[in-house]
Length: 441
Image (cartoon, rainbow, N blue to C red; front, side):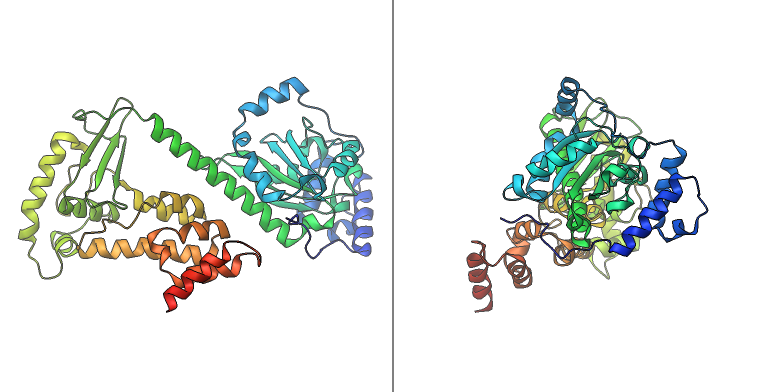
């Protein structure tokens, strides 16, 4: 398979290169007001000024911040070590050794932990100190994609002479920070280095997508680890007035599962269909609901609130014994503490663009057998949001995974889009064509 970098090139023209080089010379001479500096991209000009004011040497190779033994020990425990195969698969498909680019992965401080890719390029970039263990933070080497991406906490592309260090002028690079999927703190940076082909819009999109895929994989691994190491559930939770965490699981199940967790123990209740519908409506409508509106959402229009009240009494009794902090309040009916739901988690992940994680978290329709109008509406909201995200933004592998779940198996539009995205010689095309033809028959 060919490397993804053989795309239309967007390089600095010769005139633009000369302008940038002259502006760079004026900056190093201390002429910060020279008009030529105003012709340089603001992102680059501001980075140059930070580097110049910080006393960064414009012609020195960066220092080796991590010796070999220290580097080996450090990167074994670094969070990005677990996702290196994903990074390689997305950025260096096929033969990495003649890919024409290098990929570098650094930590949050800018120290390069892995450099892989074209063997000839690695030999040539060694001379400028682009080696594992080297410090490529902006304060150490000046303007570069990995260092400036970390300084700004966003994706950055640096072309040739835009680098602060003259040794790096023959190269271009694109880099994106990788964040912890929960705390959002920066864990490190992914960089591609090579010729002008690595600073195209397509290259930026690919590096951005790789960073998001890495964050999604980190979250999936973390959720799986928590599930595997969760403490054994006890028969009853202590009678406390507060619940640290409460979650209502409604995806793909008719009897909802209500879970609470504290520092000491967990508690689980399986709810009846009616109690599940009530709690789900109160979780979704956190501001509270009148008795009339809650009755309408649970039973349908025209049903008297008198039908709801006995069920609320029974639900309160269940919760008072096991989870007293969640006993609903009245006038309006509302929950005294926030109750998360696995369905709302999926919507949140979709909003953040974490499509792969959202699809993994989607266990099926919301309370699939429930006929409560409010549940039916929320079920359709979640289903539609997932489908629309797949059609609008999902990558090919996520789209193919969606096509395997019940919601996607009979969706001709999803299957057709996946077919259009597949390479012409993909062995998966035949199966998709057969499925589409069956649906259209």
